[in-house]
Image (tube, rainbow, N blue to C red; front, side, top):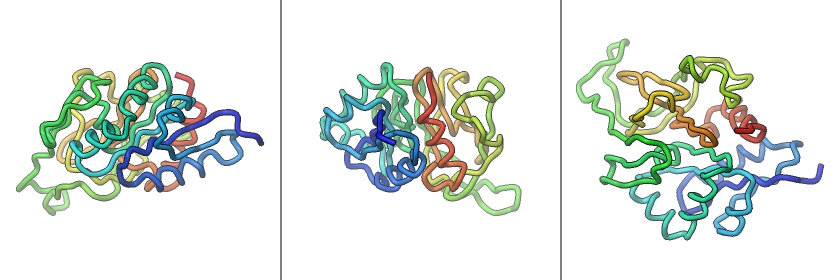
Length: 220
């Protein structure tokens, strides 16, 4: 099938780009989508939809996004095109991060906080560790149970997390998935044409690929 639409994984120098791209390519098999990993502003601008990954420190990701010349193309695309943020790419959609006292993109009202779990114990008696690293469940709030991005995915599915910071939203309506680590936090956020996950879909087996596949068909 000849590709008729383009999905671009935004390459601004953050880590984990190739694994996100490979997972998106896998999700797009036989779908008619052309999946690109691109640092070209023209290709980002021309894309039908974008994935914004992120890995490492927030300040580094924001600095690299600006230095790459892709900040403005991403902001323009986010006004009307479907955009999927991943890990720090999700945190970048908010207004500010405690990590490095870093202003971010301001697309969704809220801020990024560090887990404060020192000395606390999990139900099994072990201490909470920071970063949270490993598999955890994602449960959908009532308002987002039927969100098209969750089509065919069981509530309470397991996803793979690696993070020390979490999203604190101004409007609970923007929480499309919750996870418990010490307390409940927004592990998935959504507003209009924006959808983002704190976890790594590309490291989350079939349910992660299903999210990328749903993203190709989502019509916000």
